[in-house]
Length: 257
Ligand code: DBV
Image (cartoon, rainbow, N blue to C red):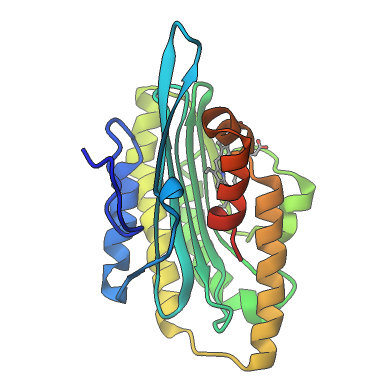
């Protein structure tokens, strides 16, 4: 069991954490890219606390895996495990604004009420067809294939619309065998398909002009600010690790642009 992590690219190993295979798939897919560690303060590499009642304490762990590459400003995985209370992999690839690339986002969440699963390639500027069209043309067939095998996750807030693509795969599944089965046979291959398309787009991406970089960077900032402000994990992380730690984690690690 690894409880000490010295570098952000050291493997994450949280006993019992169900999303381990997804993170391992992602790290393996990234391997050809010459990964460098992304600086993450010790207190965020591996954090363990007790939550729950005095009579029934629950150990909660949050670990952060992260790296950077030539074309990715930051790749980071937030790995949260608190037994039956919560199990989460939130995985985001933040491209360099030098490239016309979307964000890769995966939110894989297990709570006592069930699983919430979100996958998307999210635009920095949804109103700009040069930024979106080449992505959507390839993403939508992949989306259609997997969406047909999953129940719809229901409405998402209107204000979030500018940040989603038309390939937003979003579902809620029940706990138990049926949900597990769909996670293994649909959600995991969908995650890998979205990621391999993303890496294919990345390989093809060519540097843009300074002016376009500034435009993309402004869009990336709007996206990142929105995600930090509305982070649906804020309540959970605050319960697990306290308010100061959580705000620092959100603003200096998870959404740090
Ligand atoms: N979500 C994050 C981070 C998390 C995280 C950094 C560290 O952005 C977890 C953990 N997401 C998380 C948790 C919940 C959700 C819900 C714990 C449940 C909150 C709760 O019910 O208490 C997709 N995630 C959600 C919801 C959506 C998304 C739409 C439901 C929100 C709600 O009900 O209010 N997150 C959203 C999204 C991406 C993403 C589109 C990118 C693909 O990462």
